[in-house]
Image 1: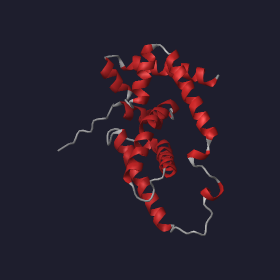
Image 2: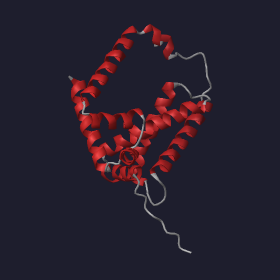
Image 3: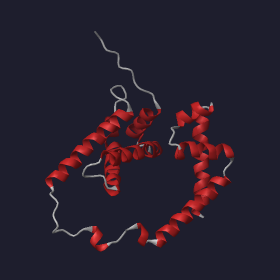
Image 4: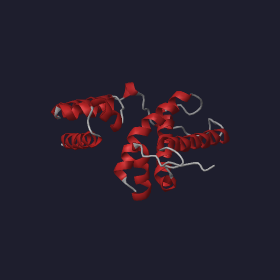
Length: 193
């Protein structure tokens, strides 16, 4: 009995193929923007030894670095992009847990907290900068045409994929993508000033 292997053509698999074949940075940025928050959220929800925000960020960086490096091995006929990326995530988590077990905690080493106090209530300049950044983003969003700001909110606030936005708003996928691209260019120009 011959099993038919159908090549997946979903948005994420298509982007991952472009990263593997063409080293397409824009495609990788889209993958990163979608999967990084999901991976980080999963890591933080798991509990255990590596739940610190910094450890989760490091794990996300390691996973996405491996995705970039190994993307040439991705075969959409064997798995979807999300399955492939989550398999890399699982392997990275296992590696991190093994590393933690091999390195017992000791009080003899110098801890970063011993030389740098990064408690949030001690950093008024950080709060000031964050407030300015938030205001700049609000101003930038307000300067966009309504159809662009609406799609940006759907993509970045609600975390929806371009194809989900396309279906929800009844717009062609290319229109959604071009509005996102135009909006991000406009926001970038207003935020860089």
